[in-house]
Image (cartoon, rainbow, N blue to C red):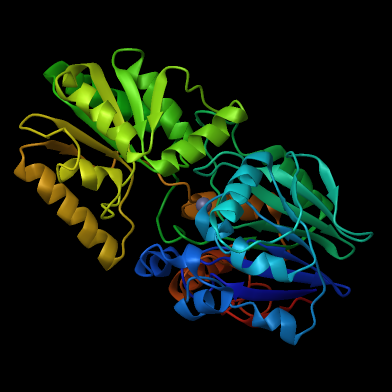
Length: 438
Ligand SMILES: [Zn+2]
């Protein structure tokens, strides 16, 4: 068995890994490196594959061509852009279908449509728990796992040499909002059947303890909203657009008290796809994205601030996103003293993003807006969640992924505590490396 560690082994982003058994391979994920995408000022959609490769925004998949790897399927674990973003740029070069869960399929299709390149790979939706035959020797099953987007999976590739579990973003939430808890029983039985290799993400492995539950965030959201409503004034909230369970929590916590509007293009795309699959009920929500629509909405909100709860895109303070437009008075709406802004999100810890977010909060506070940051929990396993995944799956070998070398090293430290040995059964990849698993 060979593992090609293509992208996401020196950064948090542009995830791509291939696993080859007996001359047949599958690719797991084809993602964006979001910071480079942002640096390219939203021009990536217009770029050719070669131009995009030069920016560092997508994985460099040369190693697969150099080794004449025969790719049978492109398997996508979930719909976040650091896992699907590079599909329009890279997938077309492989004569292989894209396989993912139904919600991820909708995101992949939206993504392909939004890019100017035309690719003709089939996109196949497979429900969790069903078997998909990749080839005579390879079968795929999506196991249910919690993350911060619906229908995230641990992909289990069943090979003649044993199982390969790719779970790049995952956690165990014992009090989730819209989906069940990670299917621990299935993880344990997969472990008993034999897992030769696990490829886990490492984003939060250096954080002690466990990840907070979504339900506990819903409770905190409700408390914050109650106090805002009691004080009166505008209440504007921002979260990640693909965080469908959080958006459900917002609707539930509001409990019919104010009219709700979702404002912004990505909110519209992700929530409409979710509604089509019954993952959110938008019947009581006004969803707007075009400038005229938002203008009209904010006109109505303006004199009746106490009647509305606005959920807008742009929690990272991105210039030009809806939060920024609201804060800089580009609509017929002005923040004033005593209005409220709730951030149900975290700021991505990179200097440009932190600067954007600082500037947004500064503008709001100058107007006397009361700001409630960090009403949030991460979708990524912390140290003790990771230990659980190792215990349940009992993998023979581990290749940690989705992180800087530092984070991969932190994971190795954890694996050593669980009895693994570096370069014997736990390996540090680098982008473009090939690891042979005996
Ligand atoms: Zn993710």
